[in-house]
Image 1: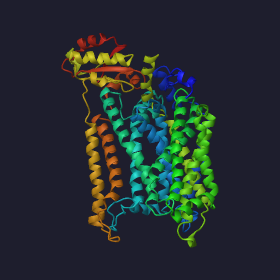
Image 2: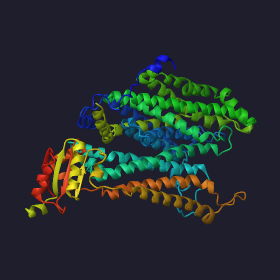
Image 3: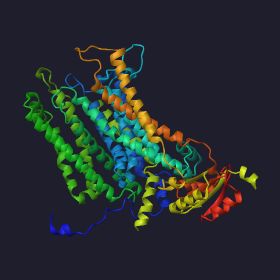
Image 4: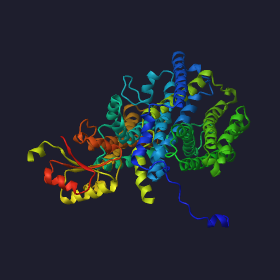
Length: 459
Length: 180
């Protein structure tokens, strides 16, 4: 550390709330106006159009899959798991940032989370919905999947195999979706009450009134409400860690080279946080510009999210390095071959693209100027979105396509239906997210209000 | 005058700032009123304590539900794999405890979360389609920027005139009648 930086006077962190918001009324107004406006931005319609079009593609892809069977996908005998599991893991990972922001940062009393938690939770729920679609449709006959997946006393008198990580997945993802929905709804009740009292339109009053369930802001209610939020955050924190650990066990419990490693659970969780924060930034940067929310999602938020991404990225980089090291150190011919095949085999380009996207480009985040520049931050986040998808592609496809028996090796080529389903879920996600932006409280209004008195006291 | 008290839910005073509401709540509680409630657009720390709120049993509900989830989760797997549908796979033990942990853990979280969520709404007596406080026109501000204190008419100390003048003494923006 240089002399100059040692002597630099202490500067307190930037406030969580921008200078434009000075009263309870202005906060409620600014967030409520996103919903109660007569002028919806054109960009919203354009995004919805893109989302709805891609959603249409998803419907066609799923309909064709159900009609024709899973043969429409590019799966073959060594590569029995293809895009469905890649996309499942990718979407679940994206979801994790929402829970991290809403639950883990709540427990750590990070006040800056307040303005981004609601939209990040919405992102979680929609991402988990997209994720959940894949295991359901990959069965080819989802109407039968109910007895494969859920333990209910059926007329055939058979039960699922609880020793299989695939059943653990059902419970982990099911619980995750349920708890995320409860937490999300719980947080929105007081904001629905704000909307109920703000709405001019009778239909809006009735709908928001029902969602608010008669919330009146009683002090006794708030006491229990805060306790419930804390308890749910405390439950969601171990849950979020368990979900991606269980997802990683789908791989780690098998004996495929490149999958059978103990580093998988922590490395998957770090990857999930990495991908999730990248997606939060991908959504927040355009949204804040679109709706002029710079006072709520301030430069400090972008800076902090950039830092979290950098840390998660370094853990992921450590995971890649460890995989290399163990492949060499194990002295197992199959592990060594797998790693060599990953780097220099037929899918080698994907591996180097992964290193570029997930390790090299994110090093830009060391610079505060990059973290504060929305264009560059968005740029890095897009690289990470792609990189995390490539990571799952490499883990799934490269390990499977050339395992123990060279006679059974084969290549995996995704078909147009693989791509259509994947792109389609992006449409589903965009459609749901922007629908929520238009009709729901995008920012936790009641939590933002609590930031105000502190600021006044300081000022 | 007493007749008016029976046809009324109570009296409500509106305040400008959260700190004023806390001070007013403390004064009201000291005065001996117990059927009181305060309303704010966000959780105001210290307001519950000022109104005599001691603690909530919600954490116990969470714990019991979590425990029930753990027992159900483990018990379900034990019942399926040891009792109802035993499969001999290479002579491995039917009761494979470590493999039962993930599902038992997830169900612990699920039951605890559901218990917390529904416990909260049951204790708060919500959803409630009708409540007299909404009859006060200014009360719509309770979800925006208003801070309210209500003394209910069924409080033993309640007297329409005395309570009104007591509330006036707390320097509110205004005091309104709450129709039942």
